[in-house]
Length: 110
Image (tube, rainbow, N blue to C red; front, side, top):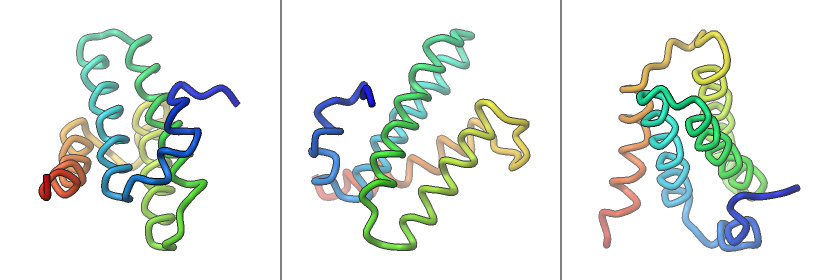
């Protein structure tokens, strides 16, 4: 598989905490939302694909069952929001709020 996040895929991703992983995924989702808001579908899709790549890296290395359930559901809902029918009725604001909690938690000790 060809990774855009080559260094992370090579093992550095596993060294990050779950909170840090989720915050980084959130960063890519934020970029996708920002590009979507600027009507730049190509850049939005690229950012979303990077987010999916990070989600998949996380899924490969989950040790805690509740984290597996969380990230799998997030992946499903994000794909539905960006490319599906939005059956979960997600909004841009709800995604920003969801990931902001991880970003805050991951950075609060720095």
